Image 1 (cartoon, rainbow, N blue to C red):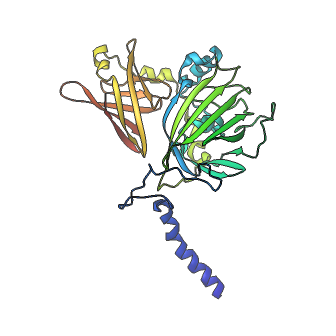
Image 2 (image 1 turned 180 degrees about the horizontal axis):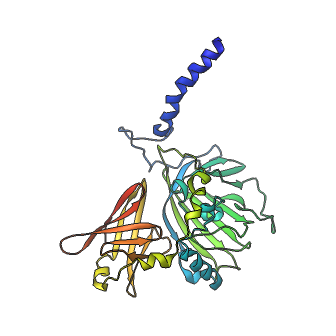
Image 3 (image 1 turned 180 degrees about the vertical axis):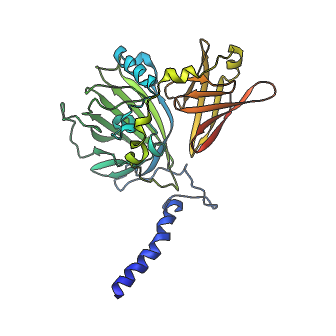
Length: 347
């Protein structure tokens, strides 16, 4: 009886403690006197003197040549157009399948959070949907023709303070970006450089003679997610019960659009910046042949379909511009189920 009472007491006390994890400051982080993390502090080092990449990271700025259709073979462009017509509902992630190489540049669940764990013989990247990558650091080489898998195979080595990772063995069921398919010839090289405590840059080179016109490069700036927690996402709870209702097509969205004069569209052209959750967002709005387009953080360009003089549909989200008395757009708000997130015009 004493043992049972002790167990009940332990459970009663552990509830509030577990709840505190969400607000628990990240331990071992240099901080100012007011508790603010010093993200410019020197890069942490492992016992072997190498940069230690361990930590919870999320992507910030992403610049990718995958958004340039000229880098893609014609058959890939055709498939992208087909996926675009159905709002990319066949995204493997929406079907509760591993995202594979798209995880490198995609924000996906939890806005791209991933946890790096570093050991001398292996580095892992863990995602909140339960998927993970293993990067073998034990000197092995990639097999030339391995069994194809969703997450592929990765080996790594150090080039000075830069981690170099090579990957292959991907199946053909994953994407590189929105609707961007690839073949099983895909080969990826990544270079990780941790500049300081809070910032890491990843340079990526994609090669796929079956899908790409040549090597395609991407660059991702990663930011250390200090004082945050990565909560699990169960895909079937998030998407599983909704897929039957995903039947709309782009032409249906376009049919609800309105025609706006070029001089009205012109007022929205510019650069906007702001925060979504804890993420810096830069949004470029351009006018091309009478149509308005937007591009966020260097991702692929997408059309903005007018629904009124100030409201637009872009992808699966809504965008509302605020205009001052002079007729100049000052803010664009991105509408989510969580509310509207305002990005102020900076150019």
